[in-house]
Figure 1 (cartoon, rainbow, N blue to C red):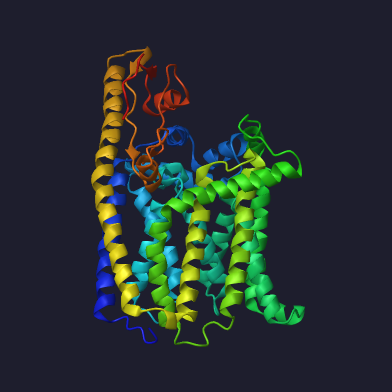
Figure 2 (cartoon, rainbow, N blue to C red):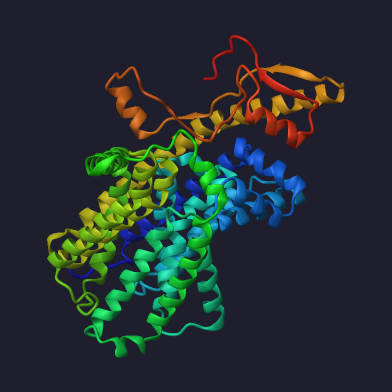
Length: 495
C-alpha cells in the first residue's frame, strides 16, 4: 500500500458506492422532512411569533425562559419565515446543507491531494452518519432545535478562520458572526468553544517557545483574542438572563451533593454516552476504513506530521477525554447524571471526528501493514451494506412517517371543521400515531428476546392528555380554535 492509487478501478467503485449511498441518505432525509409536523414547542413559538416581532420574541424568551438570545433569534427567523411563506418542511434540509457546507469548507483546505469529488463524498458520508447515528435523532426535524446539529460545524469553521494565513474583510465578518453565535446560542456548548480556542492559542504560544512578544505579533493570536472576547461577552449576557432562574426552579433539576456525587454523576453520564455509541460502531467502522485509505494516501508526504505516532495517540486521547468531561459537566450539574440526549449531539460529532483522526494517522504511519486491495474491498462491502440499510430505512420509515403525518393532518382538518361549526368547550380526539423507527439498539435487544425494549421515534411527538395540557393550549392559540382538546377515553393503540 506504499503507492495508493486513488484512480484505480477499486477506488472508482468506492466513489460510485459512496455517491449512491449519499443519494439514499438525501432522499431519506427529504422524505422525513416532508412528513415532519410542528412539535409542542414549535407550536408555542409559532403562536408567540404570530403576535410578536422577532425582537419582542427574543426579549420575551430572555426574561421568561432562557438567556439563549441567539438561539431564539434563529428560531424567530425560522418561524417568521414559516408564517410568511406558509411552509416549513424545507428547514431540516436547509440546516443539513448548511452543516455539510461548513464541514466541506474545512475539509477541502486539508485534503489537497484528493479529488474534490472524493472529499465531498467523504464529508457527506461523515455528516449523514452523524445525523443518522445521533443519540437523539428526532432533533434533526424539530424546528426549534435544529441548531443542535450545527454547533460542532460552527466551531470547526471558527477554528479554521482564526488559523488561516490571510483573512479578508468578509472572513472577519463571518468570524465575528460565528463568535456571537457560539456565545449566545447555547450556554452548555460555549465553554467547549472557549476551551478549543484557548487550547489553539496555547499551541501557538508553545510554537514561539512561550515568548509573549513573538506570540502577540502572530495575527492568529489577535483573532483568537477577538473571538474569545466576543464569546465571553455573549456568554455573560446569556448567564444573567432572568429566564434562566425561572427555568432552574423546575423540579427536574437536581445537582449532585459532594465530591462523591459528582464522581458518580460523571461516571453515569460517560458510561451512558458510550452505551448508546457502541451500537453504532459498525457504521463508524466503514467511515474509519475510508480514512485509513486517505491516511495511507498522505503517507507519501513525510513532512505532513512531525509528531510520533505514539505521541499523537496519547495527545489525542487526552484532548478527547478532557472534551468529554467538559461536555458532560452541565448535565451532571443539572441532573446528576446523563441528562437530556440532545445535549450530546456535538459529542457524537467529535467522537466521530476522533475515530476518523485515529483511522487517518493509522493509515499514515502504518501504511506498510495494510493491504490496499483488501481494505478497499472491505470498504466497498461496508458501503453496500449501509446502502441496503438505508433502502430498508427508507421503505419502513416513510410508512411510519406518513401514518404519523396523516394522523396530525386528519386531526387539524377535523378541528378546523368543528371550529367553523362554532363548537366550543372541550373536544375529544384520537391520539396521534407515534412514528416509531427501528435502530441497531432495538434490533440487538430484540434478538436477545428482551421484553422491555423501547423503540426510537422519527420525530419529537407531542399530544394532549386525558385533560387539556400545554400542547392543547398552543394548538388552540395557533389555529384560533374556540375550544381545547383532550384524548378520548380508552385511547386506541398508537403503534
